[in-house]
Image (cartoon, rainbow, N blue to C red; front, side, top):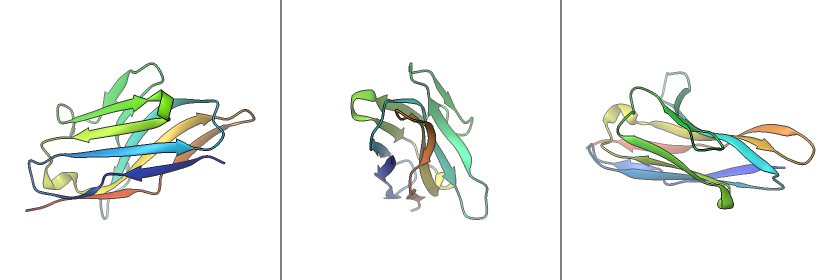
Length: 119
């Protein structure tokens, strides 16, 4: 069984920064794409950023130039550096990984970490 554990969310003032982390644990052969999604109250979950196994990245237009996704393959961990935060970035942030075990492929979600941007 593979689990994702997120950390780093919290309350921050507009213009501030936060760094989210998400670590995978379990019996893992490899991890392909890693991504961050978010869901604000009353809204659908949306893609924030994704990074492939070779380091290619893609971002939602709303976060380009402010957020940076990165990964540490040795630690099975993905990060999201969030700068110049705005109130509209307030949401629960979820990590997602495409994991290969020795027997099957899995899509795994983290439990979510809340981010609140408010003065």
